[in-house]
Length: 156
Image (cartoon, rainbow, N blue to C red):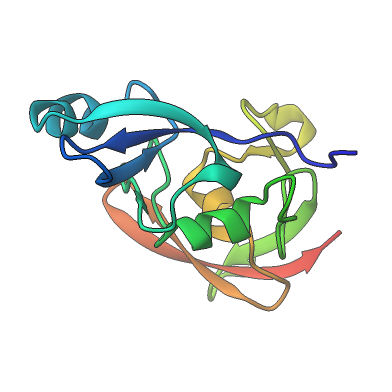
């Protein structure tokens, strides 16, 4: 029985056999369209579990910014054969900007969020920075033009 949905990713395969370039979440990613296609890459849709360890996540904000390696992505996002460690989609997280006093509580959801229900989309930089972390951790969230540090206070 699967407890987590399959995570599908787009993987850029280089023009030479056995070469892999980047993992993409968004098929409209500008890095995918402009850079890799111009270099002769082709794309495959793979389950995250089947991803080669050598391929790196795309760092554009629409994809997997903040994930360093395929292993890091698998560990933090979770797959059917590898449950995520730390904070996962579906959990409520209390957090604040490091040094700030305003405490926020949001449930991380997959896809679009409903702000009236205090939801935070897993596609936002803040949620991506927190996924895989634990209470007491400080995470760097890459926002447009700046990086902020988020202190994770409590996870339920």
